[in-house]
Amino acid sequence: MIDNLITPDYIFESSWEVCNKVGGIYTVLSTRANTLQNRFNDKLFFIGPDVWQDKSNSLFIESDTLYADWKHFALRNENIKLRVGRWNIPGNPIAILVDFMPFFVDKNQIYAEMWQLYQVDSLYAYGDYDEASMFSYAAGKVVESFYRYHLTSADKVIYQAHEWMTGLGALYIQWAVPQIATIFTTHATSIGRSIAGNNKPLYDYLNAYNGDQMAHELNMESKHSIEKQTAHHVDCFTTVSEITNKECAQLLEKKADVVLMNGFEDDFVPKGSTLTAKRKKARALLLTVANNLLGSDLDDTTLILGTSGRYEFKNKGIDVFLESLNRLRLDDNLQRNVLVYITVPGWMKEPRTDLIDRLHSKKRYNQPLESPFTTHWLYEMHQDKILNMMHSLGIKNEKTDKVKIIFVPCYLDGNDGIFNQNYYDLLLGEDLSIYPSYYEPWGYTPLESIAFKVPTVTTDLAGFGLWVKSLNAKGTINNGVEVIHRSDNNYSDVADSIKRTIESYSIKDKSEIKKIRLHASRLAEKALWKHFIIYYYEAYDIALRNAALRQMK
Image 1 (cartoon, one colour):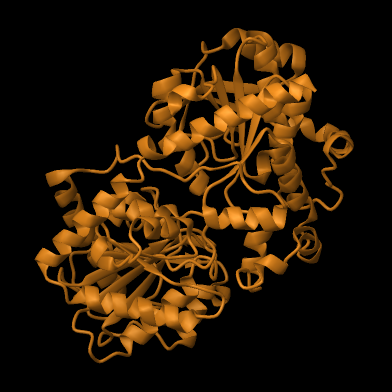
Image 2 (cartoon, rainbow, N blue to C red; image 1 turned 90 degrees about the horizontal axis):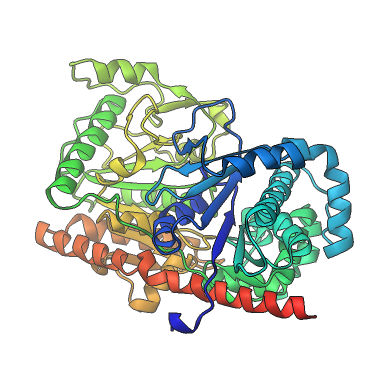
């Protein structure tokens, strides 16, 4: 099948998350890079924003020699300030970071041109729209400059833009360098996410929603406009799951040409005895932090649960997860202690010094610290949704409670002041992870979980959950992943389903758990990039063919 597809000679990809670890798109790009680098061998370029100019960034290794002549030419003749180097990830692909700030002086002119050319409406832009658009435009100028300096019309070139933040650059390239084939990938529609986040029923009424009308109602006109116009004008429009494709068809009035499911690489997942040792270390640390915070004596028989991701209280299902835990703690039939870590970056102020002091002491404490719910202090804690819901449910983390919940409101990057371990090293210590998302175009967190042999719970409103169901219609925890049915109106049923799954898992014996962990790992293997990369090759083929047709008109 691959033999019949047109293959590009050069690939450029732009994203706000190149060398900038802020969300799930980082995982998409960084785990896929090695697969593409092996095939295209330094004819793959990632373009990101140079937001690290005066700060250390371990993800970017700058080179003084790589494309030095072009870099100096771009600065001297085109006033494009950029840095060229390597992205410090498997495959070490070439990365170009561009300073987009100089383009702000021409912002209004750029917006006017995009309106005239593609009817992109930037009139009501606010917040991060300007910053993203100036980066996007700068990325387009970078590719145009590289093309004119190094390449010719004989070279088959792909430019792939990720999310609405890079749409303007894709449209600019299509106009300025029509020889380059353009791909636009939306990882979530801006309107779909906004509808869900504003507590409007997305799924029951999806077929009745008009994207333009909702953009006006939700004050999202500019983001919606760039997303919609880019989807309609590029050579190949793509998204990441069938559930998001339904949103695109309705809200953007454009179905994807190809669905690019998000794969994964397991090259950083420990194996065998190394995994066992790291899991043991992670569990010990998770229990130590909990015991010092709570004044408890939880031991290794404790069932450790976790959830993580963006702080989207409803969309990520944090609310229904807390509800399920409250029902679980009130159930007299629960036999094991359950320790839950909610690892969601919030408005974190600082690590708790009182907890640090306890962790550095050799004493054993039988009294909890003040506010024994969080490992780090937050700004305006009284307004935090997680802490407020715990309070409203009467969750106190008392010694007699079988279920204890701890909020970790920071990125686990190895320097948080409490755990000082990265996220993946702590994920290994969990027995079960829960991601009951209401709005989740794909769902990397449950996929990462099973890659580390941690069985997981997700929903059929997540792209990943639907993919699991396509492989196994049952989708039960015994197969490594429990896929719970979610809709606009079954919040209570979801809470009960999570509760039942935790209860059933808590009484499984070691041999059963060993089998489930193995099933989880084998399922993760089916989502490796070597299985999903073909969809990208199909997108390249479609884009190159459509670009050729476009130039003939």
